[in-house]
Length: 202
Image 1 (cartoon, rainbow, N blue to C red):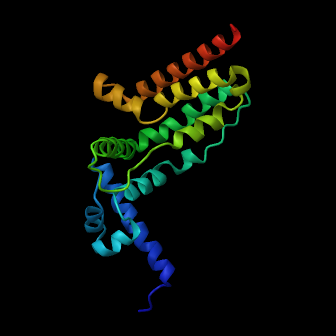
Image 2 (image 1 turned 30 degrees about the vertical axis):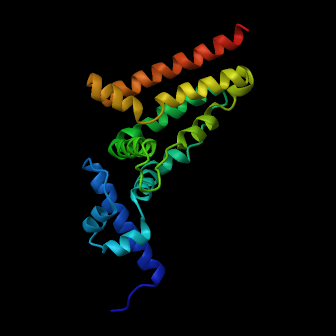
Image 3 (image 1 turned 120 degrees about the horizontal axis):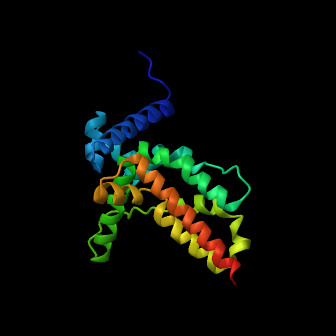
């Protein structure tokens, strides 16, 4: 039997490893490279060529899970409406890939703790894609709010845009997905309205 070209073999191997990582994360794990290799039926040596550490595994998992979210372009012209649209249109994706986002949060927290005491032995996993999305959505508000007000709104929105509302509301309050989305939307409305009100009172 003729083997496919080398680049096709590499692409197939990458897909197998990524599928295995996605499967393990959906089961509630933040897998090591060795676990991903075992699940994919690939040698450890081969797996480490594609994913040298857990940070690269989780980064690939998040990219696969949230690809459509990262490419999202708001359609409304009004800044406040664009922010609301971003939350409304992308939160269903967060719901679908909640385990994968939780894994990213877990690894980020673990790495931060280990780095603080000088025990981190692998590249630190860092999150941060939400900043660009929020900027893209809320950009029209920059002139209305001024630099200080706009910066404060961006930081406030970043607290409720992502996996954090799911963690707090589900783990502490036992909320369902619909309630998480409703409360997050309510918070967004309150934040945007408060920011605009503060800017108008100056």
